[in-house]
Image (cartoon, rainbow, N blue to C red):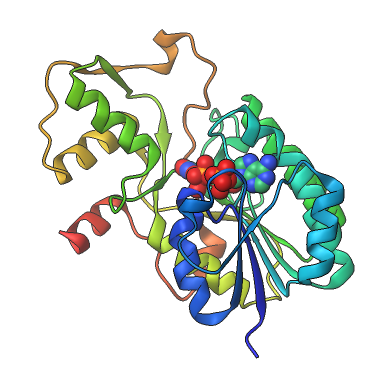
Length: 282
Ligand SMILES: NC(=O)c1ccc[n+]([C@@H]2O[C@H](COP(=O)([O-])OP(=O)(O)OC[C@H]3O[C@@H](n4cnc5c(N)ncnc54)[C@H](OP(=O)(O)O)[C@@H]3O)[C@@H](O)[C@H]2O)c1
């Protein structure tokens, strides 16, 4: 019998890519919060990570062998509120039951002032979302030391377009003024490479602790945005402008260059650069 996998955030961007792949190897339960129509595979289950009692009941009933916890992003305040309670409940259950836990964190647990960040770099968040994710990481490490805590950089894809690229494309189409920072660096990871990495981690219970999952190419927001616009056939007009975080006055982690040494050593599938992926899919 196939092992049972609980995928939280199955209705999210990453989750909707992961579900059809996970369903090939696992008996898949796909948890959503408010968007059941976005579940792409598996048995859909409604789950509110902030409702501790309901979550405990659902876990006791499902008894998953593996939990891929992708829910609770920075999409809105509701998502952010689910970060800490969800991590606590899932980590406690995983430790008690022996389930494999893959917990999704973020590169935003770092301040962006001391790059590059290695796999074992200690969190030093400056933004609210990063602080909640850093708290969740600490809880997971304490309650379930066998869990793997992955830190993806920006997750991108063109089929369908990820949320941030979608924002850029919509702005270009409408002729809005769109500012892309030249002093904010990330190491974008293609959603399909990330899915392959996560499914390998699901099958390798001996891997624990923090792991960066990112592409090998640090790009600023301008270079990243204009590359994707070009790939989508848009020529950015004069409404798309360069700017800096510094000038904007916003509190944002600026240089989140990560090094994915652990993933490179352990994983069989590649984590490719934006340029490599664009060539491969063109
Ligand atoms: N996107 C990125 O660039 C990026 C970068 C680094 C790390 N990450 C991390 O990677 C993971 C996936 O990101 P994503 O962009 O795919 O997220 P997303 O598209 O914003 O999806 C968030 C998911 O969380 C679910 N959710 C929200 N509140 C919930 C609650 N109270 N109880 C249960 N589920 C709840 C949502 O369900 P409904 O839609 O059904 O409401 C949705 O499935 C997240 O953990 C995020 O922090 C993302």
